[in-house]
Image (cartoon, rainbow, N blue to C red; front, side, top):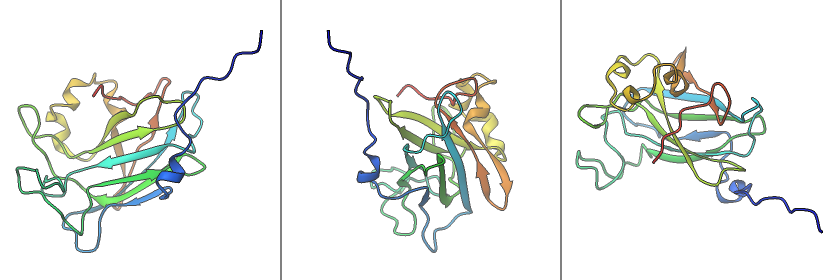
Length: 185
């Protein structure tokens, strides 16, 4: 009997599709709002860096509007703020996002705290993982209707820590004791 063949997984073809590596710039000159940078690392279940992950970022602008013509709050094309982008992790699993701090957006029953939406693709994943990045210095986290649904002991996996000067740090763990909360969407 011939040996078993390896199972098929997604990737690693992201470098061909999206050439941006390790740094994504969503804000352009003149974009209103507070400039921030979110940096981090994607790690597997053993704590090793994932060098070929692809992150998709979506976010509202500083006023809480999405850069989309169907946003009922007045969003639409904005040349100084993309609101969406993709970035690869580098050889050490790191990524960085230069953007503006998002505003609050409507949610189930009340406004949501400022956050980034993250879609994650990586070798071995057969489906996209979806998570969020909140900010530790944001008082409205306490009343966020989505964050409230996450068990209190797991919430820290969704919160980026301020390092000062508008720089935040968050790591994304695919498995293990510090596994990031991923949403079933």
